Length: 314
Image 1: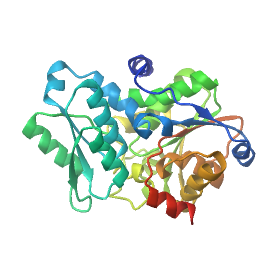
Image 2: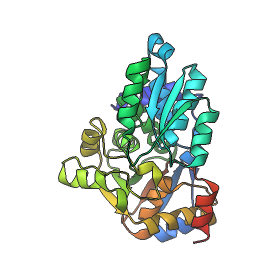
Image 3: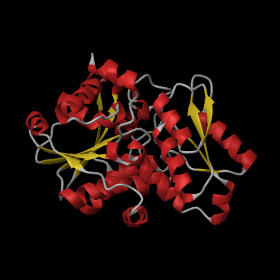
């Protein structure tokens, strides 16, 4: 799939931001390594998800574009599909949990998508999307379990290594595994010696358990503050890729995630959502022991004011 990531990179040229790499001497000292933060919180829609969404919609046929697309997402993929659809002239519909952060729903609707809310305690977002797709003829673009999504997400790590040079380690947040598997493929393609580690919340550790047992595990609506990782499991596309290309999976506590968001805000002046701060949480908490040059993907910055206020005030 490495050639597909290179092709996605060309497709995204001029549409996605080539996000900056941020450094912090304090973080370097705490981690005992040279840490390079890939700031996808500065990506369009505030998260890496724009990469995969734009790549996937770009590859649709004219007939598929005319019928429109549908997805299901807690927020970042929703916004990404909505914006990519607007840019490419494609109607978009998003099935979104009714407890999704208000800022993410507002942005999704602001980009022109129709939002269909559901109760995650009683409904299944994938089944709802499939029923609407069958009724209206929409093409389903899932949040992560699609080769074109994986290829698009992998361009974040591709850029990081192209701009920063070879890495010894790469820490990547993991929800459904699209970013993680794409990043791992990109890293192995450019820096074969790079050790890629996926990071999950302890409360949503399905991918970590799946990785270590090589058997797919699931969770249902895990109560983690990292809302972008509340996916039920890795997918039929991403699970084999994670097993093939990722070197290890680790988890971090809710306290560690909160501390990482707080650290990034106060010490690096970066606004990063809990899901996006998982790699830094792993460094600060010692969940991963690193050395040399370490890339960390900050996957997004879409956090609402009340949540950030609670984190910053402890």
